[in-house]
Structures are given as C-alpha cells and as structure tokens.
Length: 340
Image 1 (tube, one colour):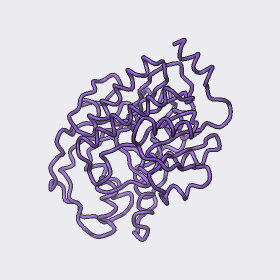
Image 2 (cartoon, rainbow, N blue to C red):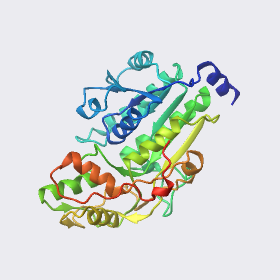
Image 3 (cartoon, one colour):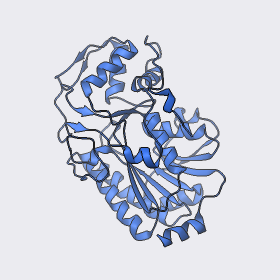
Image 4 (cartoon, rainbow, N blue to C red):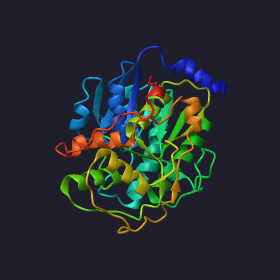
C-alpha cells in the first residue's frame, strides 16, 4: 500500500481539527452523527443540505450548512472544493423516508450519485471516504453475519446499497484511496420517522391508535442511533494503512421483533394495542438478520452500550413530548462505556 501511504504524506490529516463533510445530515443517523460531531471540539462538520432544517440549526455554530442538491459530477467537485474536507461521511440515501421514490430514482441516487461523489473524492484533498451502507445487503445466514459473508439481496433498497459498496471497493483499490464501508443493522433514535417501527410505536402510544404489525417472528438486531454515530466517529479518528475496510455495526443480540417491541413498551411503561399478524412480511426481507460486530469491537474499540428503550424515549421527547412514560437508564452496561 505504498501509494496509499504516499497520499497520506501529501494530503494527510494534520493534528488539528478534522473537517468532516457529512451528507444526509437531516436523516436519522446523519442527525445523530452531526449532533455528536458538534459536541466534539476535534471536528468541524460541513453539511450539504437541500434546505435548512430546524433540528440542524439547533446544533450551533460548529455545524456549517452549505446549500446543495446532488446533481452532476461538476456540482460535487465544486462542493468538495468549497468544503475542503479531510473526511467524507456519506450517510445520504434514497428509499427510506416517504414518499417512496421509483426504483430508478432510488438506484440513481444510491448508486450513481454515490459513485460520482466518490470520484470527486478521488480528486480532492480528502484522505478518507466512509460509505454508510446497511446490513440488509447480506444473504440471510440463520446466524450472526460476518463481513466475509455473501452480499446477496433482492430487496430493492439493499440491492442498490450492495451495488454501490462493490463499485466503491473496486474503485478504491484501483485508485489507492482509503474507503471504509460501515453496515449498520437496525437502529432508532432522535429524528427517526414513520412508518419505521419505533416511531410508529410512539405514534400509537400518543394517539391511542392500534399498531398493526407482522407476526413479529423476524429475528433482528437493534441499536440506538447514537451508538452507530459513535462507531462512525471512532472510524474517522482511526488511522489505517488498509485501502478498504468493512465493519458490521450491531449489538449482536438475536431477538424477535415482537420481543424487541414488547421490551421497549414495558421499559417505557406505555400502553399500546399491538395487532400482531395484521401486516404481511415484506418481500425479500430475511427472517434472521443479526450482526457479528467482532471486527468493530476489535479494530474500532466499539460496542453498543445505549439501551434501545432510551433511544426510543429520546425519540418520543420530540415526537410526543406530552406522552407520559418512564425514562430508562441510558446505558445497558455503564462499566464498559468509554466514549472518546
């Protein structure tokens, strides 16, 4: 990796503040990362945004917002020339927030726009590109999934992410540029949105409406969005000589969706009428999707520590501030918390 080391010598990050270009700052994970970076004096966060968002304005002066809309390659070159980032964290995505885009629109953004942004990165002073993908890219294995397991999905959103991951890895190896692919499994927290599971649970508790669900037999791995944001922060403060690295991010605890929902409901002390079995299982969603996050634990010194019910409680403070509920303890294992 001599060519990679030479690049770091020429363009490497200094001992000063890291400038982080963060796309998707108005999304759930992007917002939680922007909030974390705003609280850390080691970073300057630059967010390209289509329009101003109150949740981001509230983060203060350490967040710089640049009006921007993804378009041509030249637009991305101009963005990077203006932002002058040391690190690019690509959280922006299409296909999660309603209204749902068409298949071609979704893949045009998740694949083509991502590829153009990476090409612009290769011509910039930045020394690290972090692609935030999803654990949905993997083939179901009926056991915790490792980074070396097959990438194989027919789920439309995940298929686009898988395609982008593979294209960026090939490009990074050819260009000798540093790329980290992060694959979070399930998460929730502040700035999450309906019709996703836990915002729908909060909405049902606040309105008294029943919550229709699948049977809830799917085995899933859920984290607080704040934990995933912390993993990204550790990733961008870590030096590595490897051109390409991949990390799964999850708590590694296999539980049914029904069990996750019932636990959160009990720990918050909220009353919700959940109607299991009234919604069909989404097509091509695996029945077992749990992360083996050992690589992140070893190399990023990271593990999930925030209680999921606390993340949902935090979400409820913005969604339904008058809803009566218990405030859970934030951390599951306070003795292992060592956020840097």
